[in-house]
Picture 1 (cartoon, chains in turn yellow, cyan, blue, brown):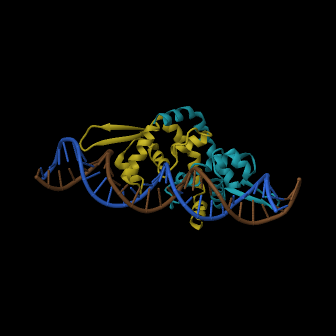
Picture 2 (picture 1 turned 90 degrees about the horizontal axis):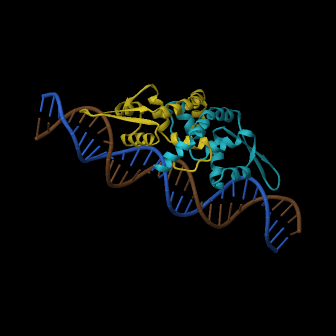
Picture 3 (picture 1 turned 30 degrees about the horizontal axis):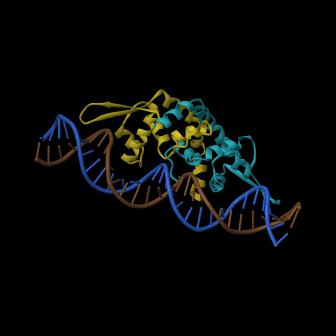
Length: 112
Length: 112
DNA sequence: TGAGGTACTTACCTTTTTGTAAGGAAGGAC
DNA sequence: GTCCTTCCTTACAAAAAGGTAAGTACCTCA
């Protein structure tokens, strides 16, 4: 979104993890490193282009680490950095809130 | 963003408060009702069109309540609903995280 | 008659984000 | 040689988000 300077901490945080895919990607990495193909299969609906694009941005923001294994066929693992892990923890209450109110949210959105 | 059905709670939550302005609007309403003009002046950089648009969406999602006072000149107050207040609380850790790491985030983004 | 204040509304446009489809590199297995 | 896997890359198009500028309605006060 690139909206510097930030008005507040929340503004900055949303700039990093907002959008359609980033929160889900961070979530997936919660339990350890995952390969590109694994992520693609987990995040149903995402295209390879979007996945790599989001991963590159998360990497540039130092939230995700990319480890390349020089093998054939190629193997690349993505994992949370320490920084990314702290963000993930800050997202837990938001995830819980969404989970708790999912039915209400979907009902409103479907009606709208 | 309209991306039903949601893959997880975080997905749903981000759908409600994602974007450039919504988190900041919710944040502003934390300490009680505010008039349209007050919000416009607080949220530096926002246009009247964007403000009303975001407020209407927050209202449709039952996060914000709109109260009209039939006076001249007009007076309209926006406030958090109980539902909106619970979301705001879930956003506190994220806001704290952003605040804590603001310098690092801005530096990375500026470098980008 | 006309200016002023508040809260919108509308038309139009630009930018950003997201999606689709196809192709490429690298080397092992056949 | 040709296929297979994995991890990307590119060109292009569609959709969504965001921004600009102007105008509206209401009544009050001068």
